[in-house]
Length: 201
Length: 201
Image (cartoon, rainbow over all chains, first blue to last red; front, side, top):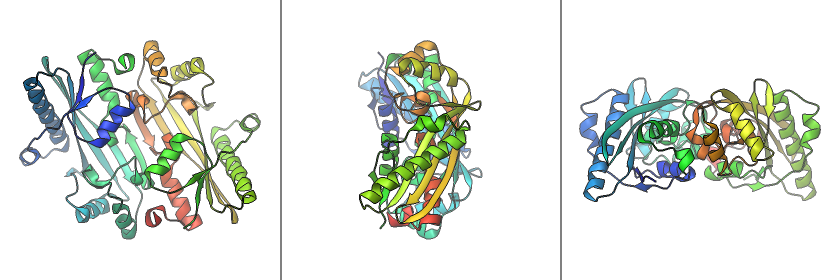
């Protein structure tokens, strides 16, 4: 059985893999996201590039430690009218972001990159899911922010948690909105890395 | 603060409310689902009727125990080409259901009913979400079934768990697919029962 390594410290992504009962290790990479963001303006390009950079950094670190495995990396951002909306800086910034998102539709884009320590192969792709919020009053937004789930989350919300109260609908992959488009990862692992997550776990 | 009472023993529905940090009690009702299913053939009608019957049974039981509160009841079923697909009887039946659902789109319908012990008001509604599966081989289906998450679940799958590997996309409420359309419940509680889940919890 191949090792699965998640190049992400995100508790949301780790929970997805845990719920699928796939044993995995996680590794946190340290890449300079801002240097890429200043050079790339297309939201899909930036999500795919950052995922690839995380996968490359994880691979380097694993090879140094002589650990073998398949590496899954991802980067999630919110796109609204062609603009990238990242993680909120603080609660005030989270309020500004949610004000932008309420009562309209945005896209949750996750770039993914999959590679293997034993091979030069690097698969890059992305998944985009439309998300539509209900309208909310300023008081409701402020009260939502108190729960703290906006922290470290693209778009300042967590669909599986309290934000489910104001998410009217989504269109696309539901696991993508949490940070890992699992059906796409399932297919790539099967077709490109000879690992079938349904048959082997 | 009003008591929130969930008229459901479903662990999935309880987890949704827990993740929203709404304190609630749950009560399991015992209604004769088959007697309604034999009289009603429309999937939306049956989901709404069963939700209402659960809410009525819970209300009766709570009034007897002199417990006050707002009661939320729900009933979830899968609809494919106008036919109702319920919970699988056993693993063999779960295999038959998944064979029907793979590689095409079905609807996950949840009927909801909300009432209050102190009032005759009874709100009935439903939410329908389209779900599209990837194609799967018979071997993959059989291996998926081994994890057991098909048990007691309409359509024989759990979108938040291992089934996320083969759910290509959804269209509609994401919490509805787990068994409670939260944005709809949020709006009804606010408009009809004077309870704002964002402002009060």
